[in-house]
Image (cartoon, rainbow, N blue to C red):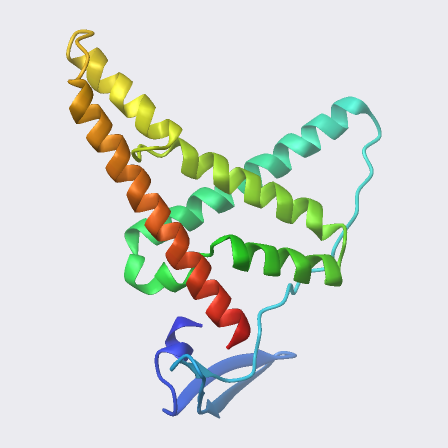
Length: 188
């Protein structure tokens, strides 16, 4: 998707497999309002949904644990992609407006998918919160670790305050930027 949005009005060749037949499609992305290219294709799940009912409480717990681990791995993998390949993935970071819009779309298509979507959002928030960023819980844990390394000696209060305040300002700025960007995408 990134390669399509990055080359509006330039011919692209897609190699696809349609029912076992290999095809080459020549497509030219149209110029969208945001300056990116669009080919009129959107992503959708290509898997059959299989509902499984647990036979016992123990089996339900095992299935829940397995799904939680899978979703957590997906979230951590996505965040690591953002960190290691920020230039290509920065436009995929969403703020509250886009998250609500995506949740509404999920609810329209499959209300039961809303549970999984809510789980992904919550796991994502938990993972981001534990990152060692100032003003988040992980930032406080990092400061405690620094104090432990210093033999229990606290950092000067003004330094700790400056670190936490700058982290809070950074998070606030990023939040406002994401809200504005996502709102403009929705109305544009």
